[in-house]
Image (tube, rainbow, N blue to C red):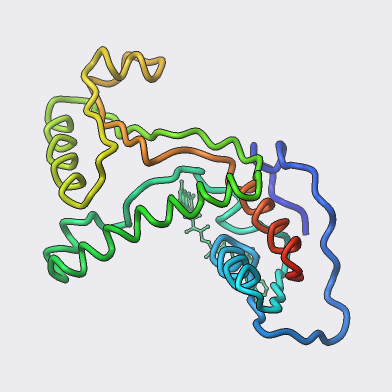
Length: 200
Ligand SMILES: Cc1cc2nc3c(=O)[nH]c(=O)nc-3n(C[C@H](O)[C@H](O)[C@H](O)COP(=O)(O)OP(=O)(O)OC[C@H]3O[C@@H](n4cnc5c(N)ncnc54)[C@H](O)[C@@H]3O)c2cc1C
């Protein structure tokens, strides 16, 4: 099955083909699906010396992992204050440190395995009006409380310097965030797995 048409599929890095499963294979751990979840788990396991097989029905990064926004964002689908309200400070603190760890793992792998996936550091949450700007100030205080010391509030001039538009009144720059080519990250992780003897 071919990748669906996208910018990412059109700019995919060259890679060796993966063999089709033929008959039975033996391994320590079999992982179903070569998206970020399966690839990341497989890479951790192969690095630790396990014999891993990843079974993929289509292609590496065929699902959401190969065609998402490519944004490395230090947050969850619910913000950390919602988690804090529902599950308490300790749980929020643990999850807060995990969200930084996730992005650090990605950056570490990009460096360690020289994965060419166009990683650009820095992500901006942009504000269209004063009310949104006020919200971003509150977000900054909240995230700093959870250990993000890489945040910078941008005023109108600041955001215009960062992105070429006059649409926004300001923003919050997170230097721990970033952007990358998700399909090439998936391919790079798959290559790293192969280098450690894993089979896909
Ligand atoms: C539109 C969109 C934008 C997003 N933007 C971002 C973003 O900017 N930043 C971010 O961090 N996250 C983003 N996400 C979320 C992110 O893409 C997902 O959380 C992540 O890709 C999930 O990875 P996964 O490995 O769990 O699933 P998938 O990437 O879907 O991988 C599952 C894999 O399993 C395979 N498979 C399924 N069933 C079988 C089977 N029976 N046998 C063998 N193989 C099978 C599939 O072919 C697929 O390759 C976005 C998601 C979407 C949909």
